[in-house]
Length: 404
Image (cartoon, rainbow, N blue to C red; front, side):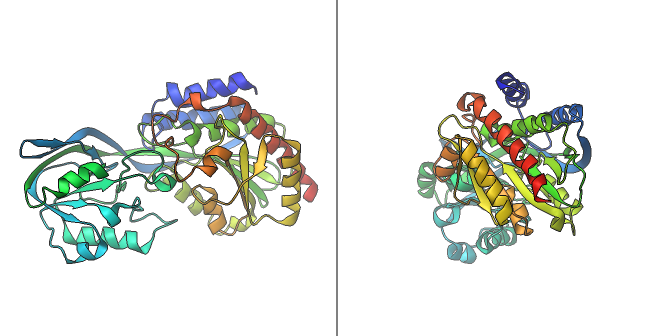
């Protein structure tokens, strides 16, 4: 385990495999790469097949008379070829009273401030989001145009962001900038031509779990999602986390202690249905009380700043050992709580958790312009930080055997 290994693993996950989105061939290659490596270090692996949807798009065109507008296909949307009058809605109340059936509906303003959670997303689904999607389903516009701004905390660094990213939502949709939305508002009542070339593809993905240790009834789960958004190399989001898991697999190849350790490259954090996470929940139903701790890695390794560890409901004895690790490793600091990661799954199940993230990214979650974009490339990370994180976590995990 060294810096060259880090670079080699990142090249494989972010460059040799250009697309790790769930359902893609690249995603399956990434999971197979992980499984082969951890198996070579003596870890027992279990692989679960997941039915998922892949998605392909070939762009979209929007015209009103002689004027053309730049629009993008919403991820996992159905395609369409529609010619219909344009109507608009800015607020939920306005949407409730409008008759929009068969028309092209422009959503803007209050309705598009934040990305709508997929209608079947189980972990976080505000009532207002559910109401908006339900109304759209009832009112049946022919298609949607969503004018959005920035929402880095939920949608990542992309601008504009897709308001709807949901393979269970069947009204065709495209998205565009707030500025284009303002121009489109002046065209309400006119006939628009919208063609969106998009299709869903039934596919499969794999969720793997790697295990070591002598006590399956007292487990530490170390996780990092392996999937990425289409169009992004997904380096800090989250190939880096997977590299740390691979380093841990090597550092702990002789581990036979208590607690048991699971390495889980979740397959679905950047996927609308979170299918890998849901399969893990199903498999562990009634067994979360055996999980002593979750350590989740997401957004680590950024070149600027240190590595932040945020703590959630740690027992005093575990917190003491973690404080010793922070004191020993100069590049690690305690961070403030944040919820946009897979550690929240464990917190919701009553498990203590540690969320590991770049300090810079933690402090810029609401304003960063990197994740989910082409900027999230290996050039923005410091591989030395991955070695420090992995060695520190190895020391911490070995220290837990003292708590028996």
